[in-house]
Image (cartoon, rainbow over all chains, first blue to last red; front, side, top):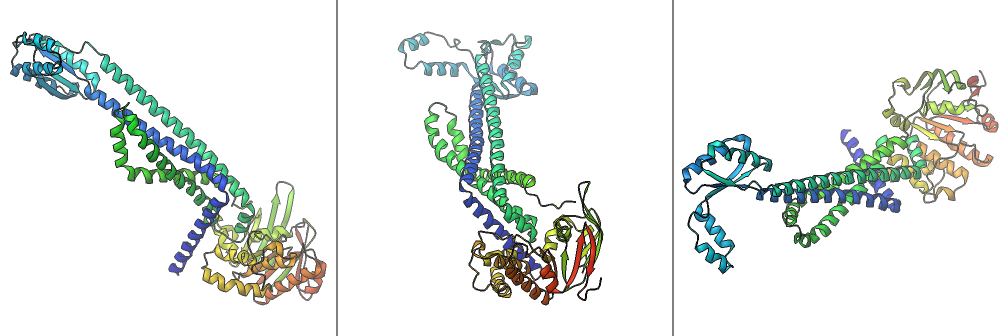
Length: 319
Length: 225
């Protein structure tokens, strides 16, 4: 008995799906319009995600380059520098990420490498003594705002005898990164607003499409109700129809995104370096993006259809 | 089988469609409900199919107490009651076969079961050879016979016919009534509303006369009230 009931449910589900698919084909123009709007919505969401990742990577990459150099007096030995480094590391409020020691020799070598093409400068360098380039440490923090706290420590009386100077006087780099971060935040919010806006338009278009489909099949629905079709049998095809819009839109949006945007990304890469790692990230999670996009389309579609059904498909008796 | 106990139906504050109507219909009966337009005939049928709920009173059909019937159980109730309408309510874009099969599709019958059952019902209503015709290619009487076939294809215990001959000429009206008699002979309770006095007199069945929302007369086959 149970097996028979299950079989009937299975047959009904197949019929519901078939009716929904037929309705999708029958309302071809409305279906195309609904699918296109939904594709734009999903495309917009994908682009926002992509832009957001790219900008985050850009901000991260710039942030990684921000550090402060602490230069030491010529007579300071390595142990004293190590002691200061340990103090900085142990102070958790400073959020120190990395401290790199640059010896006098290393500093000279780095400078030498940077002027290797200029014979004149190399000649001048040869005339300098070994203390011309002071030893230093380069300090990076997790939060670039903490760099100021770092120099407050190194400028304190405790280290006055060993610290010669620091590079913090020029805060422009950090300000530029902060500005970039704000732009990223703005673009992310703008993308979110655009996605919500297109999402709302999608819901309205699909809601109206399903409303018209309900209106077109008004007689059929009335007959179905009178001869005992279940609520699910009557409502199901509309949910299926809207889900088809969503699934096709999900495929179209990802095809557009991967086929066009990512294909053009290498060209953009020459302007914004950080696009490349983002492209790689998106390529590696393609197997998540595609089903997620299709699922999002189906959810938006069936939600819109549900709203239309609730509002326009009367199945209750009156008292 | 069917019981209405002091059933009242009001539409708004002034529209009294039925006023404390009580009646009992036994299994396998053929009952005609007559009365002028607006008397309340169709309201009784709509209450039986649960298209509408009574304002007060009790309705029981085949042991089902309508007071306890939930909305989600209404489709199951309607599957036990065959319904025929004055305007046939056939799907214009489906053939005779498909229109009848539709009633079986919605309950999840297999195509094999449908292909076995539908031709037999088509034969019962005398439409063999018209399976592939669309409703617009049929006469009014033939369309109503398709509607009867659709109503009885699930072998309901009760068949409700709301003015089934209302749009038909006398000849086709009789064809339809003959089919309904045949269905009744197979053991189905038939409740039919009509204006047609000719049918009422010739059929010689129980007649319930409704007037102003009340039962004015309930006459059995022998004519006793």
